[in-house]
Image: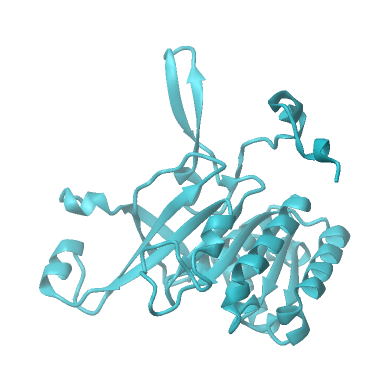
Length: 286
């Protein structure tokens, strides 16, 4: 083993360090990541929105069922594809033909050119192919071929949990290999992961434990609460039986970010719309 191959002085890494900028999601998340720069005019450091999730980051999107994880991933994918940045979408849960209808509707309600989306969205359907779901080498070979042939810049896997279903003991190993693969191929990625019923809804934990959150660059936690009491109805300004959804960034090693929890809605047209910090409610705001 040549030990010197893995040892660097910091200045030797300068030319290898990726630039820090945002890959837009088409949501308010683009303002929730930021960078800190020195403003000579102000004479102090100031925060500036990054404009998206960090370039080349691998972000885990986790939450209990029906919190909007897939909606967020699809919205990101459509937004990037419409801007002529090819997206590799690995569907593990829903057959690809159903995904077509969903993505077309997303593009229409977002006012985006669906022709661009069609030519820049590359789908790998692992939902009906056992070999791709249970043989990680076969899946990674397929993804490598697609990335090279289509020159993709972004990857969505919905959901990564489906790749270790009933074999959660392998979760850390599988997630680590996918993480390393995506880094090698210079992809920015969203990995959707599911929670088990016994896991706390507001934590970064998902099926497979904290394996996903520990390995990836950052985690976005999506949650929901059903209004079941007059007190909650009064607090949130909702009716009993309605749903309040929240989203927060639970750590990111590549860029600073807001630590606040935000209230968001899934609109009637099926889009994520992040509204305001949850703290505003406690202060008596709208």
